Length: 116
Image 1 (spheres, rainbow, N blue to C red):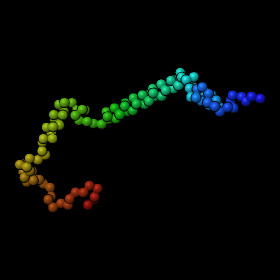
Image 2: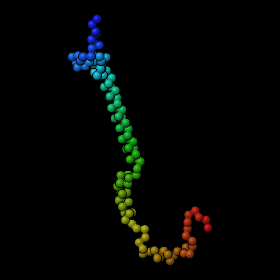
Image 3: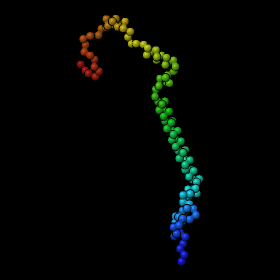
Image 4: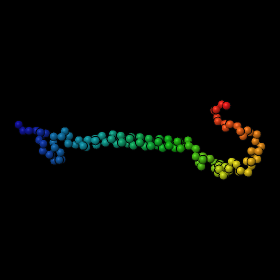
């Protein structure tokens, strides 16, 4: 009896050996090309959605931070600069304050939380 063509292991015209189940196996995804495209599109849309959510989260986080240059009105920023320029004591009136003081200079140093 003649052997069937499937038992031969000679390459056929397309370069594949006939013993493969389906010589078009590597092209079978094309059969479901619409499904494949839809799946890839969904994955891209999902990634884009995640990127948008992440960006919104970062923007919300930025709004929670207090940045004087951005969050204070312009007049306030000038006022803040003026305040930085001021010093607490100018050194001239400090002797006068000490002479009027009625605090005990020999008292123990105050330490919060310690009872005497």
